[in-house]
Image (tube, rainbow, N blue to C red; front, side, top):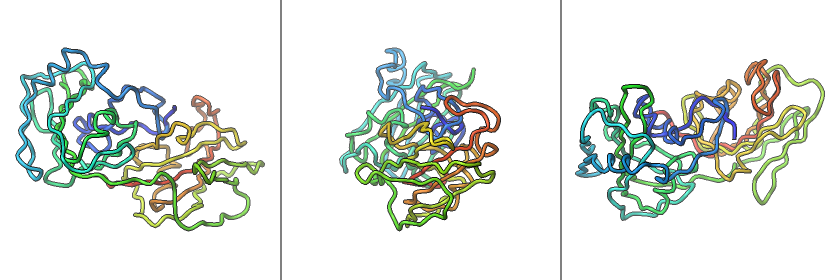
Length: 321
């Protein structure tokens, strides 16, 4: 699947960019098109990790005391590097079961493989909220575990000499995330593409109106949710479908069965502008002119100078750390 954003979420990238909440799937190994709101994740297990990488991670010492205190992370040596993403669940939890699709609250410490310096920790601020979908590379390892689970993982260095980021995490809570928009229906003005929602699945389809497409962005709520107001710096979890102006279907997260999670600051301008100020739970029709999408550049199935139609269900929004 293509992408309409610049980077995926993943704890790995957080350790490097000090934005853990925006990086929890960055090491999934899917290159994708750097422009799309979602992308299919690669295998999210340790099957690709070499024996050497697993042994290296086993040599990382993590000492936890309690859930209110950051653990100490001691690397076996520096520079510390792995060649593939690798995870090790160190301590099982005893709380509620962690289920696919839920949002996990994670306390963590990230350290640099170059010199063991601390890159980020959340214990002095607030836990990171991470949605347990296929966008999170290690979702298979944490699904089925329980709240209180403690783990450590490492990812390959992102630039020469940087060392591998090492993250020690603890799941301190979980919460359910809706699977579709819900709220009060909004009657859109005439002249817009018509959206029809499958009552069983929630998947929307679009009937185009034809004619000359608009030259300004349209962001029309179809369902008004009652959740928090979305900020431009939030990380969103959404379901979405994408069509060309003539009604040609391009892609849909509903078809993959996995919502997309991304930083709203890293998507095409039409998404950032159109979804900022909306509320969680809403379904929003976006009509995005070329100058707020891909302009005169073709992108996979999207021809150059295309006006795009999106239907977006905003399932969750988490503020930046």
